Image (cartoon, rainbow, N blue to C red):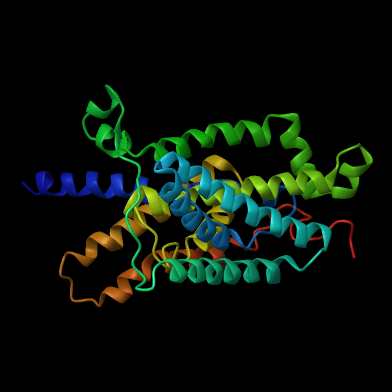
Length: 310
C-alpha cells in the first residue's frame, strides 16, 4: 500500500526536478562555454535576470512566447557583450565585474519594471504550454517525468549532446579550450583569443537569457522581482561539480533541480520545521559543492586571467 502512495509522489518529484533544472542547465551550458575560453563569469545571475525581463517585454510586445524567448536571448546576449567588452577589452577584474553586472541587472530591471507598474504587479503575457511528445509521453512513469514538459525543457536537454560534441569533438571547441588553457600558445598558432572569448561570452549570455526566459514564460507567465533568486550561482556550482563536462553538469543541474523540488514538496507536508530552513536546502547544497569541489584543480589553467596579461 505504501508503494502506491509513494510512487505518485516520486514521479511528481522527478518531473518537477527535471523542470526546475532547466534554467540551471541553460545557464550552466553557457557558463561552461565562457569558462573553457578562460573567462570567469560570475555574472550569470545578472544575465538570467536580464533574460527574465527581456523575455517578458518580448512576449508583451510580440504577443508570442517565442518572441519572448528571442527577447530573453537578446537581453542576455547584450549583457554578455557588455561583460566581454569590460573584461576582455578593458581587462577589468572578472570577479568584481561579475558582481557589478549582477547588481546592475537587478537594479535596471527593477527600475524599468517599477516605471511600468507602480503597484509592482505585472500583467500576464503569452507563455509556453506543455507539449506532450507523441507516444513517448504515454510510457508509464518515464513519459510523465520527461515527456510532458514545456518546449524549453526539451530544448535544454537536446543541447547537452550538442554542446558535448561542439566543445570536445570539433576544431572550434579545441580552439576554445586552448584559449582557456594557454592563450599565448593559441595565439601563436593563429587563434584569435579575443574573438573566441567574445563569442563565448555572448553565447553564454544568450543561453543564460534563455534560462531567465524559462522562469518568466515557462513557469509564471509574468515578471516579478527576485524571480532568479540565486540560480545563476547554483549554475556556477553545477559547472564546478560537473568538472566542465556538459553531461556531468547536466546531472549536477538535475540534482539541484530535484533538491529544489523536494523542498517545495516538503513545505506542504506540515513538518514541524520553519519553511525558511527548507528554502535553504538548494543553497546549502550549492555551498557544500563550492567548498568540496572548487579547489580540485580541474578548471582551465587560464581561467579568470586577462589576456594579454596586464
